[in-house]
Image 1 (cartoon, rainbow, N blue to C red):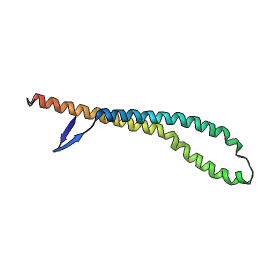
Image 2 (image 1 turned 90 degrees about the vertical axis):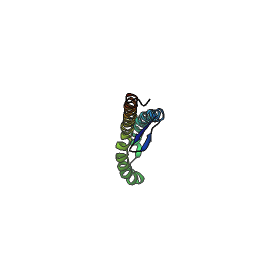
Image 3 (image 1 turned 180 degrees about the horizontal axis):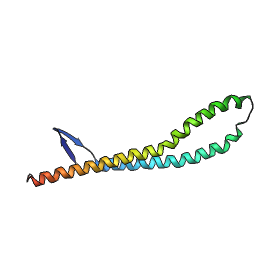
Image 4 (image 1 turned 135 degrees about the vertical axis):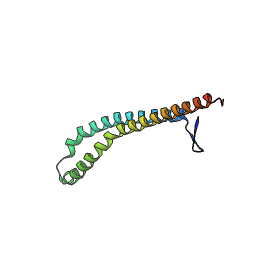
Amino acid sequence: MGINIGGGRLEMDTHVVGAAMTELRSAGEAFKSAWATADAAIRANEWGLGSDDLAQQFVPNYQASAEALRPCAEGIEPTCTAYADGGDLAVKDYCDVNERLAAQIRGAGVV
């Protein structure tokens, strides 16, 4: 399947792209599930960080890192979904344009 744009040729293997978008969406969902389990386990054990000298030096850095990490980790699944949705839309648009151009060629009696 291809589209000629300004003398150039645009090719997309829509089956490959569609499958990649499905995999991307699935990866995001798998990460979301794994992160929820890991984050719950991490939070459940944070109480045990202690208050000795080591903990007093470690905990502030740990807390800052955890606060920075959590929103990033929680954003992975929605980002994967948004990219997959965009890819699916690109496949649909590509197929629609390709079909419209094919219909124009058929209507012009070229085929």
